Length: 375
Ligand SMILES: *Cc1c(COP(=O)(O)O)cnc(C)c1O
Image (cartoon, rainbow, N blue to C red):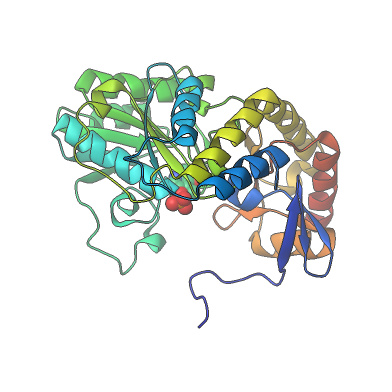
């Protein structure tokens, strides 16, 4: 048997510690991709490892219809860090499931079908969320997907105002697009989406699966833009790499969400890991740190790369460098020649999503290496 969905890289990773990964030959890599933002507090943070291991030894699993201390504590922690009034929680196992639930809850609570999504948006790959994901290459040969989805230009407030009406169940969007190319939008735009949905009784679903947990310089990107959505989804880094997602909802959604469920919802081990991850993010002030190091990184990238790149953009430690040719070769050279792991976002954007614990010295190393591989 062999795996077939992912094409594997020629680097076999054996261990992780903080901002570094080590391969089976003992070569150490600086991890500026964090496996798509899955390790906000760094690899194998001792507090997360302890929380998960002690839970593992005590009880590996019990289903969510039995209360469990780790899950209850996580519900409370999530409500504390969530935007005000978004304090009802549904736990699942991934990002796509968190969004899938968000769309189902919104349809049920509004009794409407229409969903508005945005160009270049990415919300997952199950049949429901895939219908709200923009790029055709992810959909080819899988249709028919969930119906009732209409796309509008990301960042265009007027188009959003026109699309959202009294038949609209929800708008789903990222506050800063990740997979689509690290595409920022203005505070005015997000607030216009908030007004358009509220006016029409539709739910605003903010997908913070990549932007959340301190990455953009505040716990949620919503906080930076003074927007409180009806539903906020999170996953990726929430369990420091253990599979967990969450759909955070306001009362009006949670009170009429319909019949939903998932066997593994809020298992004790992932709940303990997620609780510890949130503790570390808050206690170590990682959102503010991400803002500080991220501003520094973008500044250095702009100074050093100048016109050799088209653009440097993003917030906090969610950084995109738009290059003038395909990014694949650059990523390979960064990994093989400089032991720096980064990610693509589309064909021409280098995406940097390091653990939020990186320091300026790591940023310097990455800037030097990018300058060299591009030069
Ligand atoms: C990764 C991602 C998803 C999907 O998460 P999975 O855990 O891969 O299902 C959804 N939305 C955004 C913004 C993402 O970055």
